[in-house]
Image (cartoon, rainbow, N blue to C red; front, side, top):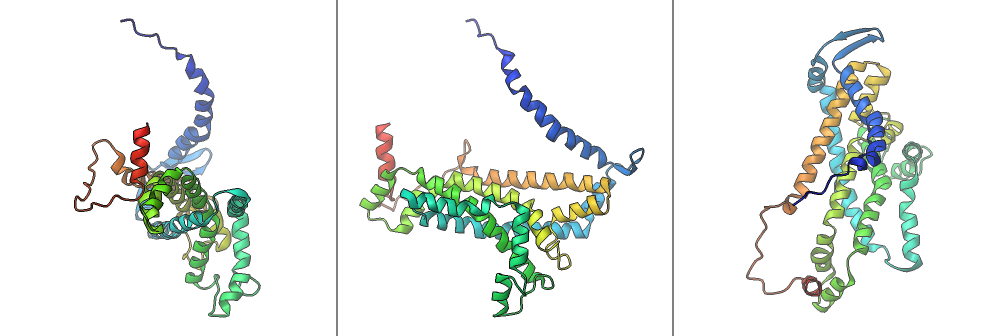
Length: 315
């Protein structure tokens, strides 16, 4: 049997994208890698140092402490934003003008630039004129400029206010895609609101929640503008995350070689952690994955299974 000849002209359609990616990602990455193994004194005076900068970054106590702060911050905002986004999405109306109005209101924080968010929350948290600072000062002393706990709390609250709407919109879109037959079957079974969420909505939201987790983890781990404007990394180093430390190293100290090595390690950390997140979240969907056997003692059909069986029979 004659094989169908291949048409390689399709490569010309993706060639512009390849060129753009090469100039915007690959070439700058190669330049950074070149700087990471050289100590740059001037454009014409450079000293090859090999992997010395990587060893210094890997053993620098300030960078290790900033990495721990990054992990703590990402864990806290994920534990807050994911459940909060699910709750808000489930409370939002599904139809009519109220649904459109709710979507517009929820999406407002997302359209505000990052630097504006930092400035707004810096003013909001001022203990003398800021609404948040004055309100908390009525209960206890509050000052993000001198108290590390207050600065950290404000940074977390700012990120939750800014990015919870993204999780909410993703979950809301996932809820709207669930067929009404599942809810009707759950109502016939007499399922409670918790059972509907557990057996109907949560399984259908799995992929949406995976996307939300990955996006929010990567964004939170790379956060820079908001905490830099809000606290500048202070008081002391209590809110100095890795991106702020990298900018100080590259821009203020102008240590290009060490900053380049730092940026490569930073990039690899994000890629590895994101890969681990994705692998763990999609473990059950991979070919050959071990599935948990259903308990035979349960004779009751979980809410929504009747609708799934009915749709399978129709197809």
